Amino acid sequence: MVMSSVTFQPTAVHTLPHKAPRFAVLGAGHGGQAMAGHLAYLGYRVSLYNRTDERLEPIRNSGGITLNGVINGFGPIEVVTSNMEEAIADADIIMVVVPANAHRFIATEAAPYLRDGQIVVLHPGRTGGALEFSHVIKSSGTKADVTIAEASTLIYAARNNNPAQVTIYGIKNSIPVAALPGHHTAQVVNALRVAMPQFVPGDNVLKTSLDNIGAIFHPGLVILNAARIEATRGDFDFYMEGVTPTVAKVLEAMDAERIAVAAALGIPATSARTWLYVAYDAAGRTLYEAIQNNHGYKGIKAPSSIYHRYITEDVPMSLVPIAALGGLLGVPTPTIRAMIHLGSLLLGENYWQEGRTVERMGIAGLTAKEIRRYVLEGELS
Image 1 (cartoon, rainbow, N blue to C red):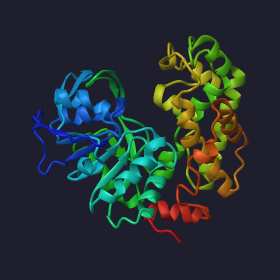
Image 2 (image 1 turned 60 degrees about the vertical axis):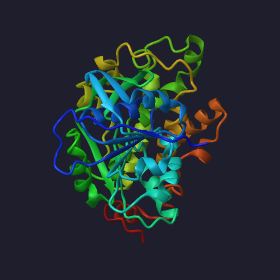
Image 3 (image 1 turned 45 degrees about the horizontal axis):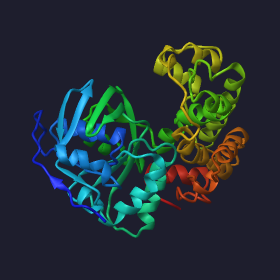
Image 4 (image 1 turned 180 degrees about the vertical axis):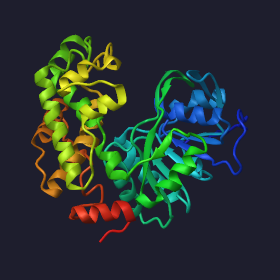
């Protein structure tokens, strides 16, 4: 049963630009509440959707979300609802802030209610998020002219510590965003930057997808440290102790396969070692040295269980699409495929069946040239 929403009149905290966009935030987890609360705190009209109503009840009762951390204040949420039609009816920009496993569900639920001119942004897309979301929308038969885009990562480091309260520990300075098709990227970024100047143009959705460094670090480290995680319940430094010289060799092999798949599509993907240097100023002759030299990783504990999104989300939504693209383009990905197999064995799942395959991304049977044309121009041969 869908419960009705409660509407509150927002109180502007900052002076809004002329014709300020209205936002819908889909997902009321850590990131979704941070984004909805932050946008509302800035004075924008925001609707917040969640599939289950229980998570919304405290927000509905309090009239919004209390922000702590780098932002301290209150964001009044105008519409709080588990009704998708109500959530997106008046939205100009739809922010999808859910685990990548839920992108297909959100696309299916939203498709009948989308209207011309709306912008949908995945925060983040993981690997192939915009491709899958767009394919679901088109397959639904909707005629709405909407633009689908994806961010390379979530803008916030945040935790929903108490009902209707979010602590925002940090806001990233620069987040690449790319649209599908690519020639809409400038339009999307300009619309987002009205509220959040941290968003910058990305090259295209292949670049944002294949620069997903979490695909290398997250599942590989959990799988290769599974016994230690189970024995200690994660009571060890995930990166400092979990990455040994031999573990780092496996991660480097995964990374090389990711870069090779990107190269087959004409995408110059950033290596994990280069990313560590750019993001954290952590240098090293090998990936192991770079990780050990990254002071930002010190003290970060391992997950307390292998039943963690580093496997449940990153294997089907990050590794499977990379391996699937490799299979389509004739690029071997034996190490990544081994991780998909092991992750499936560990959790008793079939991540090949659940994951983001080329069929689910709507690009099965296409050549590298045809994929690039679709991504840049929005045309399928």
